[in-house]
Length: 131
Image (cartoon, rainbow, N blue to C red; front, side, top):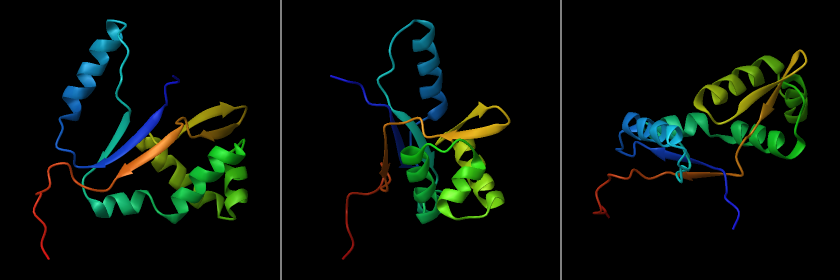
């Protein structure tokens, strides 16, 4: 069975990310594999929508399928202004969604995951529904 490198996006999962991060670092020091996917936790639905929107999906799709060699090429492929694409990719990099590889003078955007899963529901939400 092949392991899948996944980015899991959650909304305020109620977990202590610092504790999980510390435990992950300890496991790495002890050469133990970490079975948890990479996780990005956002505070609420509004932020989720601001990060993952139509423009973001277009960028991620192009990066994954076309493997552009630079931010400029990425902007050309999505037919958008280079400055706007640079700002959006920089924000995605800061969140850990993409990374940049140096390719000479260019920064090559890379989506380092096999898949992206978004769980749009809070883990600690009430189980009762309002009609």
